[in-house]
Image (cartoon, rainbow, N blue to C red; front, top):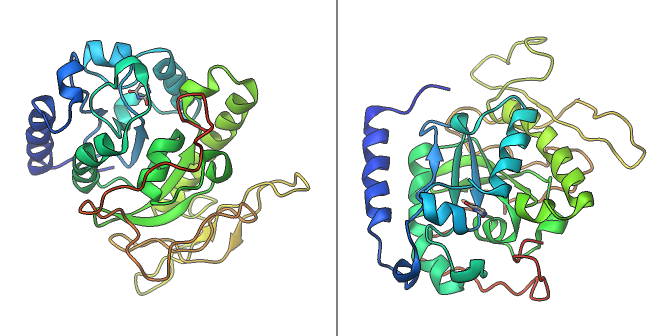
Length: 286
Ligand code: URA
């Protein structure tokens, strides 16, 4: 990945200062420190969690508690460090007692996230848990149904893949969820390669002429447990283009964007209230 340009660094540093002195919602009165997010300003992979917890609020850094440790282990399992990705949250200030973010807090804070995405221009955004997934997908379907299913989208004018996964904080206490989270993470390198326009088999075939990059879809094990199958199908996204809307993982039932639409959240629109998982007890994460 090329490093972020000086202009991008300057714009993100300016945004960071804005976030750190933000008073747009009442959470500013109870927070210790705002948590802007951290990592590579030129990252191709971005993670979006829910909100700072106790340790994050104390240190002004995202994912530094137990969930952060797990996230770092998951990153290491695919050969990445937290310095190579960008880690952010839906809310930049901690809700008291780690309660769920309120719709009006999400509305107040979301412009910061859209601007972060616009400046960093990631190729893949991994949403962690329900809140981030519902906000970025503009879809109220819960994480249990959509995890591990990449979705081609345009957010803040950036063509990218959204890849929802379980929140590490939820997975810490639920072994089955942890196993699923590990499986979903293991598929990230494949999705990243696809999002870059790379083809499986590292140079086995050259991209087609005329700038087109005929891609192959990353497959996934089907019901029968067969190995993931590479099959030529949709074109991989060329630089600057909206990625192909086709499902990436055959049989995974990945959602498709509306035809031709820019599916990204419109910062001018308030987010919809969370109704899908009203009964969820654990952090509203699944
Ligand atoms: N959980 C989150 O969603 N974000 C953090 O930064 C830490 C824990």
